[in-house]
Image (cartoon, rainbow, N blue to C red; front, side, top):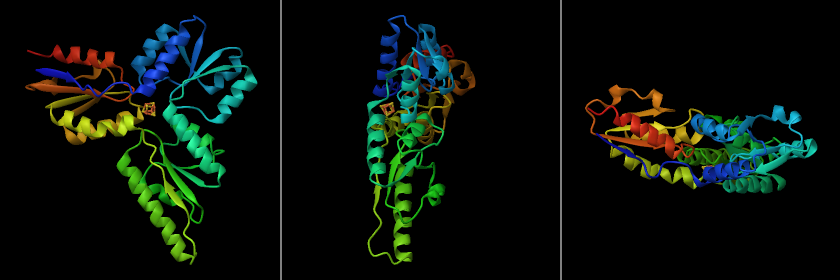
Length: 292
Ligand code: SF4
């Protein structure tokens, strides 16, 4: 049985950068706290915890005066920076530059009076950060079924959480454009209402579609490794499963089932942008043990 790790899988550069910042900051030996899990991968969180990175939540801020807190790649709303300033907490800002750029663009449209619509998951940390840049006024929709939440008659701009699915983004953009045109027709408005769709899906996720499809089809069985709460992990796994129905999602090697590999000659291993290389290596070693 030939077991191959997808060479396009593994950390995206934004995550590599965040972990590098954390590891560098921990070298001083001074305590470092991560606001929320640094990455959507429990195994990597555990490894970094052993190095001294403790995960905290906003509720712990009150007891962290004078301490250092890391902002992870997802970013934070402006209110977090305000609280840290007020409480004398030093923030180590490791927000992914791609996310920072989206925050800045959203802010600009918001300041220019636009209704902001975000295609994303309202409880996802990145989305909470983005919404914070609109004074919590942005409308968050996670599917085409929710376009009716968007008010008509206002100039509107659609953005996306960086890890969402491109095809759905464009479906939502078309529906919103149509909805706005219907409004214009229905009310005999003379000038069209302004609508923009800004595809802010990160190339590190969308660029992988095609390569992942090819890799998944080239193997008899696929094992996709990611944290269950990883947003891009879900998107990429769906692509993998579509290309190869014999795909299995696991978080750690303990979830592998020997029956998946019986009589199989090629197995592919892939993962999300938050899946560490060492974890995929460990999965590979575990699968190789099933060889007869
Ligand atoms: S997926 Fe893109 S936006 Fe998200 S952390 Fe990685 S590089 Fe940054």
